[in-house]
Image (cartoon, rainbow, N blue to C red; front, side, top):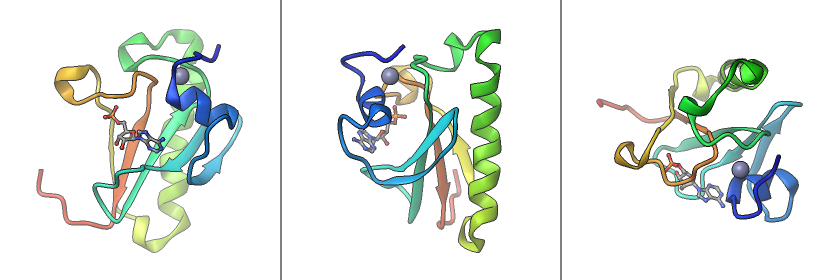
Length: 112
Ligand code: AMP
Ligand code: ZN
């Protein structure tokens, strides 16, 4: 299930360190190493799936866990109440890690 050359699989397995925020059976949340907003987290399913277009019906629990985790983060602190959730799919859209993840962005005024 985990890919040897995938940085997020290594973070999930604990092989490389990360700035841990939260986890449950289906997703882990870490701080982005290069934050674009004061609060910039990555919600990462614990299954190696390359991107949203690769999701299958079997992955529905992972897919729903992403949204529910975003809600949980938002409810956990007033500074996270308003947020943006975004997933880059494909290199032309800016994807650089090919293990599905959603950026949880908060704490800044975003105009785009
Ligand atoms: P994307 O470019 O949409 O695929 O997002 C990948 C994100 O992963 C980028 O925002 C990177 O800053 C972030 N990232 C890469 N390596 C790490 C790491 N070891 N720990 C935390 N975030 C990382
Ligand atoms: Zn992976």
